[in-house]
Length: 104
Image: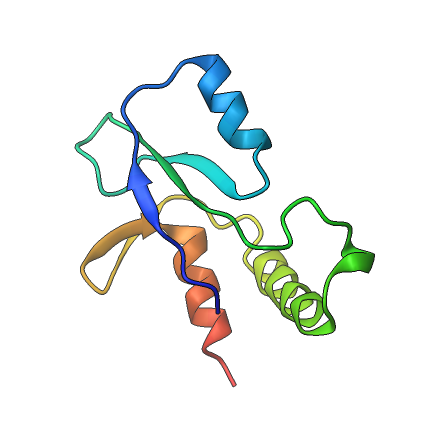
């Protein structure tokens, strides 16, 4: 599994956001989790090495893993809201996915 280095960003301009978004070595996202109520944080991190490649170009192990993740995600379709999981507030769909991934 690739190591991901996450770091919080100060407010960025639209131009800087797009520059990061288009960089194949970086990813950028926002989340309300881990922040005070009503606030979001923007997180930039290193991207997976296959970002931007077509499914056909992916290694077989990555394809297999993505197929499994998609199946788990579809199994949690429609799950909404927020739950506390191991003491951390998380999207309920993410908790559903964690629980389904652990099923044998």
